[in-house]
Picture 1 (cartoon, rainbow over the protein chains, first blue to last red):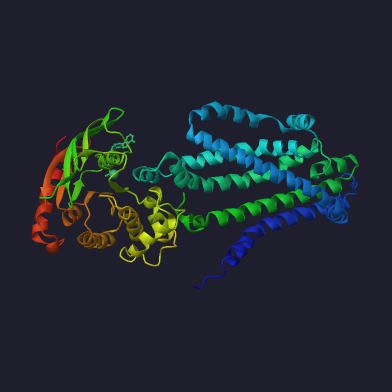
Picture 2: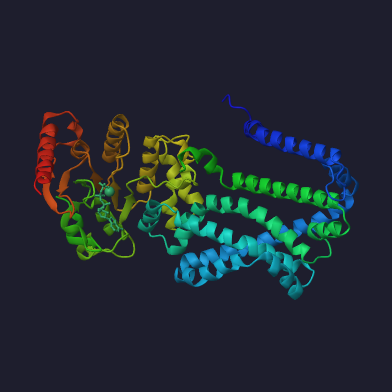
Length: 266
Length: 250
Ligand SMILES: Nc1ncnc2c1ncn2[C@@H]1O[C@H](COP(=O)(O)OP(=O)(O)OP(=O)(O)O)[C@@H](O)[C@H]1O
Ligand SMILES: [Mg+2]
Protein backbone atom coordinates (compact mmCIF):
# COMPACT_ATOMS: atom_id res chain seq x y z
CA UNK A 1 0.00 0.00 0.00
CA UNK A 2 1.27 3.44 -0.84
CA UNK A 3 -0.74 5.30 1.76
CA UNK A 4 1.14 7.55 4.13
CA UNK A 5 1.38 6.36 7.75
CA UNK A 6 -1.94 6.22 9.51
CA UNK A 7 -1.64 9.32 11.66
CA UNK A 8 0.48 11.47 9.34
CA UNK A 9 -2.30 12.03 6.86
CA UNK A 10 -4.98 13.19 9.31
CA UNK A 11 -2.40 15.41 10.99
CA UNK A 12 -1.33 17.26 7.86
CA UNK A 13 -4.98 17.57 6.86
CA UNK A 14 -5.76 18.89 10.33
CA UNK A 15 -3.05 21.50 9.93
CA UNK A 16 -4.41 22.53 6.55
CA UNK A 17 -7.91 22.76 7.98
CA UNK A 18 -6.74 24.74 10.97
CA UNK A 19 -4.70 27.27 8.98
CA UNK A 20 -7.54 29.79 8.39
CA UNK A 21 -8.49 29.68 12.07
CA UNK A 22 -4.88 30.17 13.14
CA UNK A 23 -4.50 33.16 10.83
CA UNK A 24 -7.73 34.69 12.16
CA UNK A 25 -6.66 34.26 15.77
CA UNK A 26 -3.25 35.70 15.00
CA UNK A 27 -4.78 38.76 13.37
CA UNK A 28 -7.04 39.28 16.35
CA UNK A 29 -4.16 39.01 18.83
CA UNK A 30 -2.06 41.45 16.79
CA UNK A 31 -4.90 43.98 16.64
CA UNK A 32 -5.42 43.65 20.37
CA UNK A 33 -1.70 44.02 21.05
CA UNK A 34 -1.57 47.12 18.87
CA UNK A 35 -4.64 48.71 20.42
CA UNK A 36 -3.71 48.01 24.05
CA UNK A 37 -0.11 49.13 23.48
CA UNK A 38 -0.80 52.34 21.51
CA UNK A 39 -4.04 53.69 22.96
CA UNK A 40 -2.46 54.25 26.37
CA UNK A 41 -5.18 52.22 28.10
CA UNK A 42 -4.15 51.08 31.59
CA UNK A 43 -2.90 47.49 31.83
CA UNK A 44 -5.22 47.00 34.82
CA UNK A 45 -8.10 47.53 32.42
CA UNK A 46 -6.87 45.87 29.23
CA UNK A 47 -3.49 44.16 29.37
CA UNK A 48 -1.67 43.37 26.12
CA UNK A 49 -1.56 39.73 25.05
CA UNK A 50 2.19 39.73 25.52
CA UNK A 51 1.73 40.79 29.12
CA UNK A 52 -0.84 38.02 29.63
CA UNK A 53 1.69 35.52 28.30
CA UNK A 54 4.60 36.83 30.34
CA UNK A 55 2.49 36.90 33.51
CA UNK A 56 1.20 33.42 32.80
CA UNK A 57 4.79 32.22 32.59
CA UNK A 58 5.75 34.06 35.75
CA UNK A 59 2.78 32.64 37.67
CA UNK A 60 2.95 29.20 36.09
CA UNK A 61 3.36 27.51 39.48
CA UNK A 62 0.17 29.03 40.87
CA UNK A 63 -1.69 28.44 37.61
CA UNK A 64 -0.72 24.79 37.52
CA UNK A 65 -1.61 24.36 41.17
CA UNK A 66 -5.06 25.75 40.42
CA UNK A 67 -5.51 23.81 37.18
CA UNK A 68 -5.20 20.41 38.84
CA UNK A 69 -8.29 20.76 41.07
CA UNK A 70 -10.28 22.06 38.07
CA UNK A 71 -9.16 19.12 35.98
CA UNK A 72 -10.06 16.78 38.85
CA UNK A 73 -13.52 18.32 39.30
CA UNK A 74 -14.13 18.16 35.54
CA UNK A 75 -13.04 14.56 35.14
CA UNK A 76 -14.73 13.22 38.28
CA UNK A 77 -17.87 15.23 37.68
CA UNK A 78 -18.02 14.12 34.09
CA UNK A 79 -17.38 10.49 34.97
CA UNK A 80 -20.15 10.64 37.56
CA UNK A 81 -22.43 12.26 35.02
CA UNK A 82 -21.69 9.53 32.47
CA UNK A 83 -22.46 6.78 34.97
CA UNK A 84 -25.76 8.42 35.92
CA UNK A 85 -26.71 9.22 32.31
CA UNK A 86 -25.92 5.67 31.22
CA UNK A 87 -27.90 4.16 34.09
CA UNK A 88 -30.94 6.29 33.33
CA UNK A 89 -30.63 5.65 29.61
CA UNK A 90 -30.73 1.90 30.23
CA UNK A 91 -33.67 2.20 32.62
CA UNK A 92 -35.59 4.32 30.14
CA UNK A 93 -34.74 1.98 27.27
CA UNK A 94 -36.06 -1.04 29.16
CA UNK A 95 -39.04 0.63 30.85
CA UNK A 96 -40.35 3.11 28.31
CA UNK A 97 -43.00 4.67 30.61
CA UNK A 98 -40.10 6.02 32.67
CA UNK A 99 -39.26 8.29 29.80
CA UNK A 100 -42.47 10.24 30.20
CA UNK A 101 -42.07 10.33 33.95
CA UNK A 102 -38.45 11.49 34.02
CA UNK A 103 -37.89 13.63 30.95
CA UNK A 104 -39.83 16.65 32.19
CA UNK A 105 -37.78 16.62 35.39
CA UNK A 106 -34.54 16.46 33.43
CA UNK A 107 -35.62 19.20 31.06
CA UNK A 108 -36.45 21.46 34.00
CA UNK A 109 -33.03 20.71 35.50
CA UNK A 110 -31.54 22.20 32.35
CA UNK A 111 -33.39 25.47 32.78
CA UNK A 112 -31.92 26.18 36.22
CA UNK A 113 -29.65 29.23 35.98
CA UNK A 114 -26.15 28.17 37.03
CA UNK A 115 -25.44 31.59 38.52
CA UNK A 116 -28.16 31.04 41.08
CA UNK A 117 -27.69 27.33 41.62
CA UNK A 118 -23.90 27.20 42.01
CA UNK A 119 -23.70 29.30 45.20
CA UNK A 120 -26.58 27.32 46.72
CA UNK A 121 -24.96 23.98 46.05
CA UNK A 122 -21.70 25.27 47.52
CA UNK A 123 -23.63 26.56 50.52
CA UNK A 124 -25.21 23.14 51.07
CA UNK A 125 -22.25 20.90 50.28
CA UNK A 126 -19.21 22.96 51.22
CA UNK A 127 -15.99 23.87 49.46
CA UNK A 128 -14.92 20.30 48.69
CA UNK A 129 -15.14 18.23 45.55
CA UNK A 130 -18.78 17.15 45.99
CA UNK A 131 -20.53 20.39 44.90
CA UNK A 132 -18.21 20.65 41.88
CA UNK A 133 -19.01 17.12 40.81
CA UNK A 134 -22.69 17.93 41.15
CA UNK A 135 -22.53 21.06 39.07
CA UNK A 136 -20.47 19.43 36.34
CA UNK A 137 -22.96 16.56 36.32
CA UNK A 138 -25.86 19.00 36.21
CA UNK A 139 -24.63 20.63 33.01
CA UNK A 140 -23.46 17.46 31.25
CA UNK A 141 -25.95 14.82 32.32
CA UNK A 142 -28.81 15.82 30.07
CA UNK A 143 -26.93 16.12 26.78
CA UNK A 144 -25.33 12.73 27.44
CA UNK A 145 -28.67 11.12 28.26
CA UNK A 146 -30.27 12.52 25.13
CA UNK A 147 -27.34 11.38 23.00
CA UNK A 148 -27.61 7.84 24.36
CA UNK A 149 -31.38 7.65 23.91
CA UNK A 150 -31.09 8.94 20.38
CA UNK A 151 -28.42 6.37 19.70
CA UNK A 152 -30.58 3.51 20.95
CA UNK A 153 -33.48 4.74 18.86
CA UNK A 154 -31.26 4.82 15.77
CA UNK A 155 -30.73 1.06 15.88
CA UNK A 156 -31.34 -0.54 12.50
CA UNK A 157 -34.77 -2.23 12.44
CA UNK A 158 -33.47 -5.03 10.27
CA UNK A 159 -30.75 -5.83 12.78
CA UNK A 160 -33.36 -5.97 15.53
CA UNK A 161 -35.59 -8.24 13.46
CA UNK A 162 -32.60 -10.43 12.72
CA UNK A 163 -31.67 -10.78 16.39
CA UNK A 164 -35.28 -11.48 17.30
CA UNK A 165 -35.34 -14.25 14.68
CA UNK A 166 -32.26 -15.72 16.36
CA UNK A 167 -34.14 -15.89 19.63
CA UNK A 168 -32.29 -13.03 21.34
CA UNK A 169 -33.72 -11.74 24.62
CA UNK A 170 -34.34 -8.05 25.20
CA UNK A 171 -31.11 -7.82 27.19
CA UNK A 172 -29.12 -9.52 24.43
CA UNK A 173 -30.70 -7.23 21.88
CA UNK A 174 -29.60 -4.26 23.94
CA UNK A 175 -26.06 -5.53 24.38
CA UNK A 176 -25.50 -6.67 20.80
CA UNK A 177 -27.41 -4.03 18.85
CA UNK A 178 -28.76 -1.02 20.71
CA UNK A 179 -25.67 -0.26 22.73
CA UNK A 180 -23.16 -0.42 19.87
CA UNK A 181 -25.55 1.55 17.65
CA UNK A 182 -25.51 4.30 20.25
CA UNK A 183 -21.73 4.61 20.36
CA UNK A 184 -21.34 7.22 17.59
CA UNK A 185 -24.10 9.30 19.20
CA UNK A 186 -22.51 8.84 22.59
CA UNK A 187 -19.18 10.17 21.33
CA UNK A 188 -20.78 13.11 19.56
CA UNK A 189 -22.43 13.97 22.88
CA UNK A 190 -19.17 13.41 24.72
CA UNK A 191 -17.28 15.93 22.61
CA UNK A 192 -19.88 18.62 23.22
CA UNK A 193 -20.42 17.86 26.89
CA UNK A 194 -16.75 17.82 27.81
CA UNK A 195 -16.55 21.50 26.94
CA UNK A 196 -19.60 22.22 29.13
CA UNK A 197 -17.96 20.20 31.88
CA UNK A 198 -14.97 22.54 32.13
CA UNK A 199 -17.23 25.58 32.22
CA UNK A 200 -19.34 23.91 34.90
CA UNK A 201 -16.32 23.16 37.07
CA UNK A 202 -15.02 26.73 36.80
CA UNK A 203 -18.46 28.06 37.65
CA UNK A 204 -18.61 25.87 40.72
CA UNK A 205 -15.21 27.07 41.85
CA UNK A 206 -16.16 30.65 41.19
CA UNK A 207 -18.99 30.20 43.65
CA UNK A 208 -16.60 29.01 46.32
CA UNK A 209 -13.53 26.81 46.45
CA UNK A 210 -10.19 26.54 48.18
CA UNK A 211 -8.30 26.10 44.92
CA UNK A 212 -9.09 25.94 41.24
CA UNK A 213 -9.07 28.08 38.12
CA UNK A 214 -12.48 29.52 39.00
CA UNK A 215 -11.45 30.84 42.36
CA UNK A 216 -8.10 31.94 40.92
CA UNK A 217 -9.92 34.06 38.34
CA UNK A 218 -12.12 35.55 41.03
CA UNK A 219 -9.16 36.48 43.23
CA UNK A 220 -7.20 37.90 40.33
CA UNK A 221 -10.18 40.02 39.35
CA UNK A 222 -10.57 41.29 42.91
CA UNK A 223 -6.88 42.19 42.95
CA UNK A 224 -7.25 44.17 39.72
CA UNK A 225 -5.17 41.72 37.73
CA UNK A 226 -7.06 41.19 34.47
CA UNK A 227 -3.84 39.85 32.99
CA UNK A 228 -3.97 36.93 35.42
CA UNK A 229 -7.70 36.45 34.81
CA UNK A 230 -6.95 36.16 31.10
CA UNK A 231 -4.00 33.88 31.78
CA UNK A 232 -6.34 31.54 33.71
CA UNK A 233 -8.91 31.80 30.92
CA UNK A 234 -6.25 30.73 28.42
CA UNK A 235 -5.30 27.81 30.62
CA UNK A 236 -8.93 26.72 30.80
CA UNK A 237 -9.19 26.98 27.02
CA UNK A 238 -6.14 24.78 26.62
CA UNK A 239 -7.59 22.35 29.16
CA UNK A 240 -10.86 22.19 27.24
CA UNK A 241 -9.06 21.61 23.96
CA UNK A 242 -6.97 18.87 25.52
CA UNK A 243 -10.04 17.10 26.88
CA UNK A 244 -11.80 17.51 23.56
CA UNK A 245 -8.78 15.96 21.84
CA UNK A 246 -8.72 13.11 24.35
CA UNK A 247 -12.40 12.44 23.65
CA UNK A 248 -11.64 12.26 19.93
CA UNK A 249 -8.77 9.87 20.48
CA UNK A 250 -10.98 7.63 22.64
CA UNK A 251 -13.69 7.76 19.98
CA UNK A 252 -11.25 6.68 17.30
CA UNK A 253 -10.03 3.80 19.40
CA UNK A 254 -13.49 2.71 20.50
CA UNK A 255 -15.18 2.92 17.09
CA UNK A 256 -12.57 1.76 14.60
CA UNK A 257 -15.27 0.83 12.09
CA UNK A 258 -16.71 4.32 11.82
CA UNK A 259 -13.53 5.68 10.20
CA UNK A 260 -14.02 3.22 7.34
CA UNK A 261 -17.73 3.70 7.36
CA UNK A 262 -17.83 7.50 7.06
CA UNK A 263 -18.91 7.62 3.45
CA UNK A 264 -21.90 5.43 4.15
CA UNK A 265 -23.29 7.37 7.06
CA UNK A 266 -25.90 10.05 6.49
CA UNK B 1 -42.15 -37.55 -1.84
CA UNK B 2 -40.47 -36.35 1.34
CA UNK B 3 -42.32 -35.17 4.41
CA UNK B 4 -43.79 -31.70 4.75
CA UNK B 5 -41.59 -29.45 6.89
CA UNK B 6 -43.35 -26.11 6.88
CA UNK B 7 -47.06 -25.80 6.49
CA UNK B 8 -48.97 -22.52 6.57
CA UNK B 9 -52.73 -22.62 6.55
CA UNK B 10 -54.88 -19.53 6.22
CA UNK B 11 -52.33 -17.18 7.75
CA UNK B 12 -53.68 -13.62 7.87
CA UNK B 13 -52.28 -10.35 9.12
CA UNK B 14 -53.38 -6.75 9.04
CA UNK B 15 -51.73 -3.63 10.42
CA UNK B 16 -54.27 -1.21 11.91
CA UNK B 17 -56.95 -2.24 9.46
CA UNK B 18 -54.54 -2.49 6.50
CA UNK B 19 -54.93 -6.10 5.35
CA UNK B 20 -51.51 -7.38 4.32
CA UNK B 21 -51.73 -11.18 4.34
CA UNK B 22 -55.00 -12.78 3.34
CA UNK B 23 -55.34 -16.48 4.20
CA UNK B 24 -51.96 -17.59 2.94
CA UNK B 25 -51.56 -21.35 2.68
CA UNK B 26 -48.40 -23.01 1.45
CA UNK B 27 -46.11 -25.95 2.15
CA UNK B 28 -42.41 -26.62 1.94
CA UNK B 29 -41.16 -30.21 1.99
CA UNK B 30 -37.97 -31.54 3.39
CA UNK B 31 -35.01 -30.59 1.19
CA UNK B 32 -37.14 -28.46 -1.06
CA UNK B 33 -36.30 -24.99 -2.38
CA UNK B 34 -39.49 -22.96 -2.67
CA UNK B 35 -39.77 -19.37 -3.88
CA UNK B 36 -42.38 -16.72 -3.31
CA UNK B 37 -42.87 -14.19 -6.09
CA UNK B 38 -45.07 -11.19 -5.67
CA UNK B 39 -45.37 -7.49 -6.37
CA UNK B 40 -43.54 -4.97 -4.22
CA UNK B 41 -45.43 -4.12 -1.04
CA UNK B 42 -47.54 -7.27 -1.29
CA UNK B 43 -46.60 -8.49 2.17
CA UNK B 44 -43.79 -10.95 1.46
CA UNK B 45 -41.45 -9.64 4.15
CA UNK B 46 -44.38 -9.51 6.54
CA UNK B 47 -44.92 -13.22 5.92
CA UNK B 48 -41.36 -13.90 7.07
CA UNK B 49 -41.85 -11.65 10.07
CA UNK B 50 -44.82 -13.79 11.02
CA UNK B 51 -42.66 -16.91 10.77
CA UNK B 52 -39.74 -15.50 12.77
CA UNK B 53 -42.01 -14.07 15.44
CA UNK B 54 -41.30 -10.45 14.53
CA UNK B 55 -45.05 -9.79 14.19
CA UNK B 56 -47.95 -11.82 15.56
CA UNK B 57 -50.36 -13.28 13.02
CA UNK B 58 -54.05 -12.48 13.33
CA UNK B 59 -55.25 -15.88 12.27
CA UNK B 60 -54.32 -19.19 10.72
CA UNK B 61 -51.82 -21.85 11.59
CA UNK B 62 -48.12 -22.37 11.16
CA UNK B 63 -46.83 -25.91 11.63
CA UNK B 64 -43.31 -27.14 11.36
CA UNK B 65 -42.67 -30.88 11.15
CA UNK B 66 -46.27 -31.31 12.19
CA UNK B 67 -46.10 -29.24 15.38
CA UNK B 68 -46.90 -25.62 16.23
CA UNK B 69 -43.90 -23.29 16.48
CA UNK B 70 -42.37 -23.39 19.94
CA UNK B 71 -39.74 -21.31 21.68
CA UNK B 72 -36.93 -22.69 19.60
CA UNK B 73 -37.32 -21.27 16.12
CA UNK B 74 -36.55 -23.72 13.32
CA UNK B 75 -35.70 -20.85 10.96
CA UNK B 76 -32.47 -19.14 10.04
CA UNK B 77 -33.55 -15.81 8.62
CA UNK B 78 -31.76 -13.55 6.17
CA UNK B 79 -33.40 -10.10 6.13
CA UNK B 80 -34.07 -8.14 2.97
CA UNK B 81 -31.13 -5.81 3.51
CA UNK B 82 -28.05 -7.64 4.71
CA UNK B 83 -28.33 -6.23 8.26
CA UNK B 84 -24.63 -6.73 8.90
CA UNK B 85 -23.53 -4.94 12.03
CA UNK B 86 -21.11 -2.21 10.91
CA UNK B 87 -19.28 -2.34 14.23
CA UNK B 88 -18.49 -6.05 14.04
CA UNK B 89 -15.78 -7.57 11.92
CA UNK B 90 -16.99 -9.94 9.22
CA UNK B 91 -16.14 -13.03 11.23
CA UNK B 92 -18.02 -11.70 14.27
CA UNK B 93 -20.99 -10.89 12.07
CA UNK B 94 -21.12 -14.42 10.77
CA UNK B 95 -21.03 -15.93 14.27
CA UNK B 96 -23.85 -13.71 15.55
CA UNK B 97 -26.51 -16.41 15.54
CA UNK B 98 -24.27 -18.89 17.31
CA UNK B 99 -23.37 -16.28 19.91
CA UNK B 100 -27.05 -15.63 20.58
CA UNK B 101 -27.52 -19.38 21.00
CA UNK B 102 -24.86 -19.26 23.70
CA UNK B 103 -21.99 -20.85 21.77
CA UNK B 104 -18.68 -19.46 23.00
CA UNK B 105 -16.84 -17.02 20.75
CA UNK B 106 -13.95 -19.39 20.20
CA UNK B 107 -16.17 -22.35 19.35
CA UNK B 108 -18.33 -20.20 17.09
CA UNK B 109 -15.30 -18.91 15.20
CA UNK B 110 -13.98 -22.43 14.82
CA UNK B 111 -17.26 -23.34 13.16
CA UNK B 112 -17.41 -20.47 10.67
CA UNK B 113 -13.77 -20.13 9.72
CA UNK B 114 -13.65 -23.25 7.51
CA UNK B 115 -16.65 -21.93 5.55
CA UNK B 116 -15.07 -18.63 4.55
CA UNK B 117 -13.37 -20.05 1.48
CA UNK B 118 -16.55 -21.68 0.19
CA UNK B 119 -18.39 -18.38 0.62
CA UNK B 120 -15.70 -16.45 -1.23
CA UNK B 121 -14.75 -14.46 1.85
CA UNK B 122 -11.34 -15.93 2.46
CA UNK B 123 -8.97 -13.33 3.87
CA UNK B 124 -11.76 -10.92 4.80
CA UNK B 125 -12.48 -12.34 8.26
CA UNK B 126 -11.02 -9.32 10.04
CA UNK B 127 -12.50 -6.66 7.76
CA UNK B 128 -15.46 -4.50 8.63
CA UNK B 129 -18.63 -4.81 6.50
CA UNK B 130 -18.06 -1.34 5.06
CA UNK B 131 -14.91 -2.68 3.44
CA UNK B 132 -16.76 -5.38 1.50
CA UNK B 133 -18.38 -5.23 -1.93
CA UNK B 134 -22.14 -5.67 -2.25
CA UNK B 135 -21.82 -9.29 -3.33
CA UNK B 136 -19.46 -10.09 -0.48
CA UNK B 137 -21.84 -8.50 2.01
CA UNK B 138 -24.63 -10.73 0.76
CA UNK B 139 -22.43 -13.81 1.01
CA UNK B 140 -21.42 -12.83 4.54
CA UNK B 141 -25.10 -12.42 5.43
CA UNK B 142 -25.85 -15.79 3.90
CA UNK B 143 -22.99 -17.40 5.80
CA UNK B 144 -24.35 -15.87 9.00
CA UNK B 145 -27.69 -17.48 8.12
CA UNK B 146 -26.60 -21.00 7.22
CA UNK B 147 -24.06 -21.40 10.01
CA UNK B 148 -26.87 -21.24 12.56
CA UNK B 149 -27.61 -24.77 11.46
CA UNK B 150 -31.37 -24.44 11.74
CA UNK B 151 -33.64 -26.86 9.89
CA UNK B 152 -34.82 -24.27 7.39
CA UNK B 153 -33.58 -21.09 5.68
CA UNK B 154 -35.78 -18.04 5.08
CA UNK B 155 -34.13 -15.80 2.50
CA UNK B 156 -35.72 -12.41 1.83
CA UNK B 157 -34.51 -11.13 -1.54
CA UNK B 158 -30.92 -12.08 -0.86
CA UNK B 159 -29.70 -10.70 -4.18
CA UNK B 160 -32.20 -7.89 -4.65
CA UNK B 161 -29.70 -5.11 -4.13
CA UNK B 162 -27.04 -6.42 -6.50
CA UNK B 163 -26.23 -5.47 -10.08
CA UNK B 164 -27.28 -7.96 -12.76
CA UNK B 165 -23.85 -9.47 -13.29
CA UNK B 166 -23.05 -10.00 -9.62
CA UNK B 167 -26.56 -11.30 -9.12
CA UNK B 168 -26.18 -14.00 -11.80
CA UNK B 169 -22.86 -15.01 -10.29
CA UNK B 170 -24.44 -15.26 -6.86
CA UNK B 171 -27.37 -17.29 -8.16
CA UNK B 172 -25.02 -19.77 -9.76
CA UNK B 173 -22.99 -19.90 -6.59
CA UNK B 174 -26.07 -20.50 -4.45
CA UNK B 175 -27.12 -23.28 -6.79
CA UNK B 176 -23.76 -25.02 -6.31
CA UNK B 177 -24.03 -24.57 -2.57
CA UNK B 178 -27.51 -25.99 -2.69
CA UNK B 179 -26.32 -29.10 -4.48
CA UNK B 180 -23.72 -29.71 -1.76
CA UNK B 181 -25.78 -29.02 1.37
CA UNK B 182 -29.02 -30.59 2.28
CA UNK B 183 -30.91 -27.38 2.92
CA UNK B 184 -34.62 -26.63 2.99
CA UNK B 185 -35.38 -23.06 1.99
CA UNK B 186 -38.08 -20.54 1.34
CA UNK B 187 -36.91 -17.64 -0.84
CA UNK B 188 -38.60 -14.32 -1.50
CA UNK B 189 -37.74 -12.67 -4.76
CA UNK B 190 -38.91 -10.18 -7.36
CA UNK B 191 -36.94 -11.87 -10.05
CA UNK B 192 -38.91 -14.48 -11.99
CA UNK B 193 -35.82 -15.89 -13.66
CA UNK B 194 -34.05 -16.24 -10.33
CA UNK B 195 -37.04 -18.11 -8.93
CA UNK B 196 -37.16 -20.49 -11.90
CA UNK B 197 -33.43 -21.09 -11.79
CA UNK B 198 -33.25 -21.87 -8.08
CA UNK B 199 -36.58 -23.38 -7.05
CA UNK B 200 -38.36 -26.68 -7.03
CA UNK B 201 -41.67 -24.90 -6.68
CA UNK B 202 -42.84 -21.30 -6.87
CA UNK B 203 -45.83 -19.57 -5.33
CA UNK B 204 -47.03 -16.33 -6.86
CA UNK B 205 -48.78 -13.83 -4.61
CA UNK B 206 -51.30 -11.14 -5.50
CA UNK B 207 -50.73 -7.47 -4.70
CA UNK B 208 -51.65 -6.42 -1.17
CA UNK B 209 -53.47 -8.02 0.56
CA UNK B 210 -51.31 -10.94 -0.47
CA UNK B 211 -53.14 -14.12 -1.41
CA UNK B 212 -51.61 -17.17 -3.01
CA UNK B 213 -52.44 -16.80 -6.66
CA UNK B 214 -50.90 -19.89 -8.18
CA UNK B 215 -48.34 -22.55 -7.59
CA UNK B 216 -45.81 -23.57 -10.24
CA UNK B 217 -43.56 -26.59 -10.27
CA UNK B 218 -40.16 -26.40 -11.93
CA UNK B 219 -39.64 -29.97 -13.11
CA UNK B 220 -36.12 -29.41 -14.44
CA UNK B 221 -33.36 -31.46 -12.78
CA UNK B 222 -30.75 -29.25 -11.15
CA UNK B 223 -27.98 -30.73 -13.23
CA UNK B 224 -29.64 -29.44 -16.40
CA UNK B 225 -30.66 -26.02 -15.17
CA UNK B 226 -29.65 -23.18 -17.32
CA UNK B 227 -31.05 -19.69 -17.30
CA UNK B 228 -31.47 -19.76 -21.06
CA UNK B 229 -32.96 -23.21 -21.61
CA UNK B 230 -36.24 -23.39 -23.51
CA UNK B 231 -37.96 -25.25 -20.69
CA UNK B 232 -36.97 -22.61 -18.17
CA UNK B 233 -37.97 -19.78 -20.48
CA UNK B 234 -41.38 -21.29 -20.93
CA UNK B 235 -42.06 -21.51 -17.20
CA UNK B 236 -40.74 -18.01 -16.81
CA UNK B 237 -43.08 -16.69 -19.48
CA UNK B 238 -46.03 -18.42 -17.90
CA UNK B 239 -45.29 -16.96 -14.47
CA UNK B 240 -44.77 -13.48 -15.87
CA UNK B 241 -48.04 -13.75 -17.72
CA UNK B 242 -49.92 -14.65 -14.52
CA UNK B 243 -48.27 -11.87 -12.54
CA UNK B 244 -48.92 -9.22 -15.19
CA UNK B 245 -52.51 -10.24 -15.81
CA UNK B 246 -53.47 -9.98 -12.20
CA UNK B 247 -51.96 -6.53 -11.99
CA UNK B 248 -54.20 -5.32 -14.75
CA UNK B 249 -57.35 -6.31 -12.96
CA UNK B 250 -58.21 -3.84 -10.28
N1 LIG C 1 -44.73 -3.11 11.20
C1 LIG C 1 -45.60 -2.63 10.30
N2 LIG C 1 -46.55 -1.76 10.66
C2 LIG C 1 -47.43 -1.28 9.75
N3 LIG C 1 -47.42 -1.61 8.46
C3 LIG C 1 -46.50 -2.47 8.04
C4 LIG C 1 -45.54 -3.02 8.93
N4 LIG C 1 -44.73 -3.87 8.22
C5 LIG C 1 -45.18 -3.82 6.96
N5 LIG C 1 -46.24 -3.00 6.83
C6 LIG C 1 -46.99 -2.75 5.61
O1 LIG C 1 -47.28 -3.97 5.03
C7 LIG C 1 -47.21 -3.90 3.61
C8 LIG C 1 -46.35 -5.02 3.09
O2 LIG C 1 -45.00 -4.81 3.49
P1 LIG C 1 -43.86 -5.89 3.20
O3 LIG C 1 -42.60 -5.33 3.68
O4 LIG C 1 -44.29 -7.20 3.73
O5 LIG C 1 -43.89 -5.94 1.61
P2 LIG C 1 -42.98 -6.77 0.63
O6 LIG C 1 -43.88 -7.66 -0.14
O7 LIG C 1 -41.87 -7.41 1.37
O8 LIG C 1 -42.44 -5.65 -0.32
P3 LIG C 1 -41.02 -5.53 -1.05
O9 LIG C 1 -41.05 -6.52 -2.15
O10 LIG C 1 -41.01 -4.13 -1.56
O11 LIG C 1 -39.97 -5.82 -0.03
C9 LIG C 1 -46.70 -2.51 3.29
O12 LIG C 1 -47.80 -1.74 2.86
C10 LIG C 1 -46.16 -1.99 4.60
O13 LIG C 1 -46.37 -0.62 4.68
MG1 LIG D 1 -39.89 -7.16 1.44
